[in-house]
Amino acid sequence: MNSAASSRVPRHIAIIMDGNGRWAMQQGKPRLHGHEAGVHAARTIVRAGRDAGVEALTLYAFSSENWLRPATEVSFLLELFIRTMAVELDTLHDEGVRVRFIGDRTALPSNLLAIIEASERRTASNPGMVLVIALGYGGRQDLVQTVRALGAQIEAGALKAADLDEKTLRDALDLGDLPDPDLLIRTGGEYRISNFLLWHLAYTEFYFSDILWPDFSSADFHQALAWFAERERRFGRTGAQVHSERGDQDAQ
Ligand code: FPP
Image (cartoon, rainbow, N blue to C red; front, side):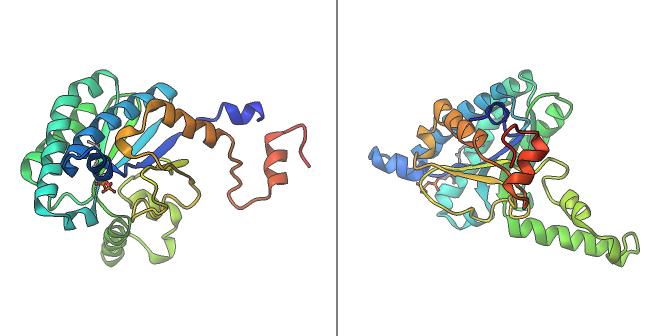
């Protein structure tokens, strides 16, 4: 391993926290118990990310398709998010974390909406890691909303279609000006991106783990970081170009 690689910490990590239901069933408990355990894992990984110097951590907590789950599970999850934010907000704030939510808020209950807005307001000027919670989020819906908003600007004469470029579009997406994730972690043994950050994952490194989310520990997270540090990111260029730009001794 070269030393440049070993010191590379991803600036932005996105995580698909999968496997809560299976984890609970393996223990002979109801699926909802797995979501409770999932919150503990999320807390551990937020701390681990912050301590590792990650600038942004985006957690996929509830997708636009998760609304299709049984009504009891959906309402349990929404209540769990309210409870979790109520319990964690003070600590996150004290640790300097900036909390943001992405996703469609229109279907969220008013008490959840209230705590989302309060969390964002209270932590808005914190200097530390940005914690993005994707809730009611879908990558396709994000793109449609954005195209619609830009289309409206074009109709109003505020934007010219010919001036629309990658930066205009990406800045208008829900993540705004955060850098694209460098690393995507998906737990739970599935190999798909499930309508997560479709635009932003174009050049992200994908790390898949069989571990079910409630069991995903700080050591597992560090294993993913170590794996990432070994990746050679080329963004379409050749390996030789990348080595030579980095000034590696063995550039060829
Ligand atoms: C996947 O497990 C997880 C979810 C649907 C999201 C819920 C996540 C949490 C409760 C973690 C806490 C996060 C925050 C930010 C408070 P699954 O039910 O799809 O598992 P399965 O594939 O085993 O059925």
